[in-house]
Length: 314
Image 1 (cartoon, rainbow, N blue to C red):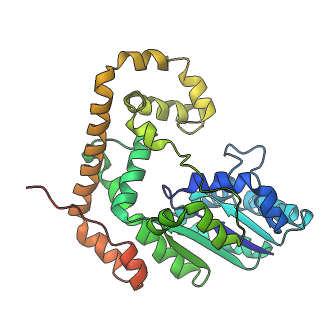
Image 2: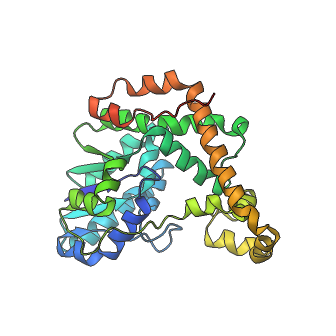
Image 3: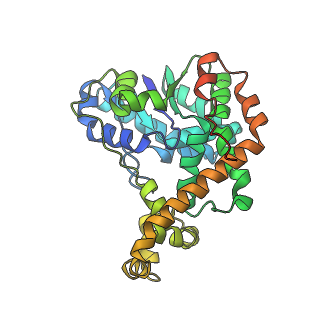
């Protein structure tokens, strides 16, 4: 039984893809492809499979092995010969490489062949988009001083991922261009390539609202508090438990009323300008290192990951 894994990157249409795959589970199953749900005990959405990847990254391979066995059994029961999984956490293994070999070994005990798929963005655009999302979750700051090391890592993430997977599982990984997929339709093109199944729906609308959160001044004010409460209750910043606890302390409607209506768009524009400038400044500081990281890559991937530099204003 084969397994296909879509592993991100973050900010590459993953939420829309996962929504479409979830909606079309019956169609996939009719083509003998299982897109399983998450365990009922998991704190992750049923649209994706971060439970499995979180266990592997935490080196909880007993739980990982047990869940893979459950997925394999479910596929057999559904008369499927293929399992399809999706989680952006698949892009986190280069940061914890010691977990990956054991994870792949566990996959191979249940599935053969295996195939990973990743969608790649140009580094400056990718880093800027993810940086803003991390700020909205309270994990990053608009202060360049406090965020420069995180921004540098974001700029290096795409090339590090390509180098890692090309080295660890050569011949078992595909890389896709986010720019090309957006021109052709991310959901339709990627699902067709991974499964050979045509979905009856047009391209899914953008469902990831982090850009809207990032541009909402009240959300910017609440981000540190959400992060604090999320840590305290063991949930992510926009999880249900965090939101319920936050409501004990903050009235969102009153907070929005306290913001001057005519200032919202100005603050949003200021926010997007400052975050873009922060990423550009960190890129210029570490330009040689970032370009050196993509230099050994094959020509096509090197072109894809060559940063799109903006002219420096004088």
